[in-house]
Length: 113
Ligand code: 5GP
Ligand code: ZN
Image (cartoon, rainbow, N blue to C red; front, side):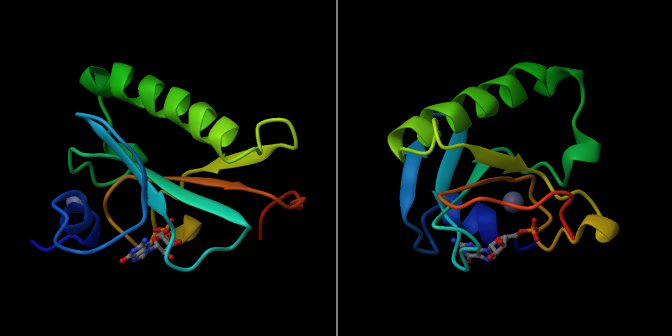
């Protein structure tokens, strides 16, 4: 099964990587919806947020810490940012590899459309 984010993880598809460790990778979205739009993924292929289980608890916590760290790096920690997960069809999930959108650099409306 082909997966674009697994291909980015394997560096078969280029991306502007802003963070990487053993278990997590973050790269700029190809179609940014805000001045800062970064995708943070677990390297492990998890289909969606609804597929996580107990053994992923630490991984998900670490992804949140990575998001805060990148927000500081990108100078949006003070101005504010949004961390978004689209899970399933109603949320418009287009890539079936769990990813967190880190969005910032402009004010955002609520609720999202
Ligand atoms: P979703 O709608 O699944 O929550 O978000 C998928 C995101 O992945 C979209 O914002 C889209 O722009 C981004 N994306 C899709 N393909 C690629 C790609 O090949 N490279 C990068 N950097 N982003 C991608
Ligand atoms: Zn994948």
